[in-house]
Length: 556
RNA sequence: UGCCUGAUAGUAUAAGGGUAGUACAUCAGAUUUUGAUUCUGAGUGUCUUGGUUCGAAUCCAGGUCGGGCAACCA
Image 1 (tube, rainbow, N blue to C red):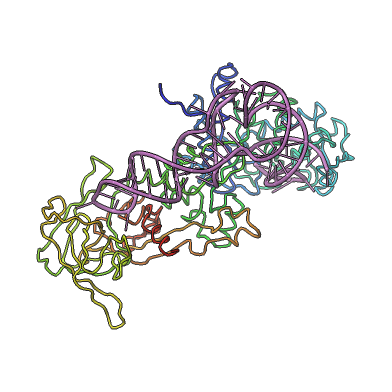
Image 2: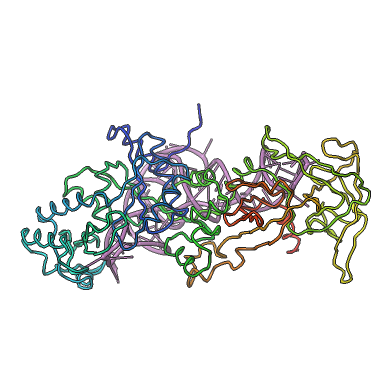
């Protein structure tokens, strides 16, 4: 018997609904407002909504919740579509709440006719004041008891453009003393003489979220309308409209939005980071936006895996960044081609090496049994990583030191014979000898070494620029710290190395491909790369047990 | 002072009256031509106080703490 993964609360609800025969297929929707870019929190919602219909049969619509023309733009529509597709999901229909404006308008008239809505001439301050407070009931507007005929006429005039923005609104007539503030005669239509990205200038009245979202769900016969916790109090209104309008009863369910440690996850805060130039745009690789993460080198598969592993529930949460890193490493380990790149070069000369034009073959990816090999030119003069040599090695250091031996990955074992320094005592070169019988794959030397280093032949090296990213914030949950979240920005979140030395094969790097720079981390080509100046973004480091070990030594 | 909502290892998520489990993180060890990967092992948890029950993370009551609710935003 196959081991069953336990169900989350939504899967349970759906399985119950299905087995009770309430629906014969599951219909969900992903409803972004096109007023910004998608981020990791949206990714969780996307995986949830699309994942559910994939699992249980049915489909998911992409519906733009575009009821506020003053903040929404086509540019966002395009980026959102791109991100959803990139994440690997296909929507059944591309829809817009604004496609339903006519229908919604008729719904409003229906409500007026039934005596459930009225036009209010009060300004927004008055309406807010009359709402009361959570602990105090509100009071009725003096326009609340207009006749149905008058309401119909005024609403018609609103639609016809007779009034200026803010001059009148349409309100649902519910109960100004209701314990739920949202039920105190909520505004459902407002006047906005604004150009709409999708409907142009066809309308000057626009429905509010509460008078568009549930109705859109209903029109589309969405069976399970999944949203985040802050909409819990809206559910009562959602159901009220469905009941009074007597339309298809979609049901709303709420889950806790996904947060991630060491970052922020609200459009508003992310926009601040962009506007105040803390980052270089929405797709800055440090941003938790889908576009930023894509640019950084995260794979769609790893993001899906992350969402899957974290799961969903109804309590506030901050998911561990290390889990995301684990997911992307796991994916990249399988698919990334290995390359050798030296970031901080130290020259070594193999004094006994006389071969010319030697090429060694190094595996492209040891995790891939069918993986090929690439040719890497070897030479008498090489670069290794400066930190891979120490004059006074600590205990358990098994890299290079004077008199010590290491293997050069895919090539020979070498021994350090002499350290050469400049006048100020800086190490500028190591003279080493190589063991000719120790050639990789053909080793008859019988020498065992603990360390293996990456290297490049100086004569053949190509150069590149590298961008190393660290977490954007120093605090685990910057939004919950004292003061402004921006006080916790990690000012060292980006480190640029203008010139690194790479094996020639890296010259053929292609956008969208993933590489593991041996012992350094996973990298991908940045979109700002040019032929003469390739730029690589570090997606994530490799796990580094040795670095951790060093920290312990420091403490002692 | 009201209403809604939640609380299980460091984090996230299971167990739905019957052995508190899984993953990541952490620690220890093995393997390793990446101090990577892989493998083995370890430790840490039911917010609290009562009640019901042979038996409670689970059911009931009170409390505590967190989040949300007073946009012509979504």
